[in-house]
Length: 373
Image 1 (spheres, rainbow, N blue to C red):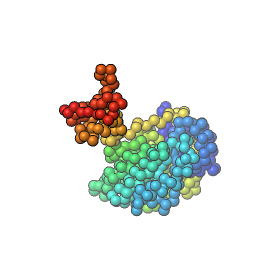
Image 2: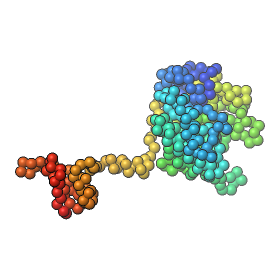
Image 3: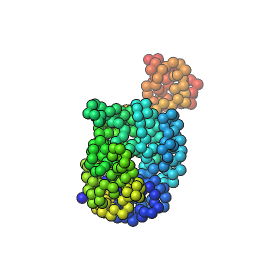
């Protein structure tokens, strides 16, 4: 059977045995909020190909971007950099802000500017970045309105630049009472997003939270109620298998982390640390294959540089005597490199310019001459 794309979301290493879980499940992906270097080094020793994503936690009120996107991105990079340096070589990527909400085109453009700056800073530091991490069903993406009219805004057309600067697209996908409920709008929404994005802005997708979450149920009465309020472990596994099989059909999806290994929410109802059947399902395929995503498409500028570097370049020695003489005498641009030759036993150098051929006897630099063209 193919290796599952499901993995785990780790809020804290306290109270759960991550090492034993990894030995049994060998998950393809893990998201970590607890940056204990020694533990995650051991995880990599147990399962070298497990892809680990780090999250630097900020309170919602600290996730600022709207007023000065580039400055806020730089501030966030500075805050997370110590964690990123400590985990360098162990974590494979970092996600940015968590579940940012945008309400209009202006906010979408500014959030894109935030990620363009953060992605650049991450690349300059040789770190991998995962952009956006929108909540399930967010942002607006051009779907029909609930009343059947067409259509809600599509903010993705304003978010592409942020993705171009980053390495991965991070999304959250939940539903309730089943993961299949409202599929396409909630779970599997990533397919719609992929089709909306320009090709040069498409990035491999990491589903950094998934599962059953009562927060999507209208009215709010089921908020923070996880899978244990809706189904049994067997029922939850069935829903996760459905989602896993769908994601296995899409090569651009690298993996999906189930939220969460730890007890969280009302009565700890999201926890899967004791859900052995889910763990064993993830582990059934053995060790995960290495994640080697296709490099992003070239930008126009990258294509031009590559083409320019594929042809021989004419050397320009703007410190040479012939070059200086030609410029001083208005002979315009050089057309050849320096040409070395011998005449009557003496060594000469010549060089062709637009308006003349300049030549000189070697070591007789004060007697440069020109043959007009």
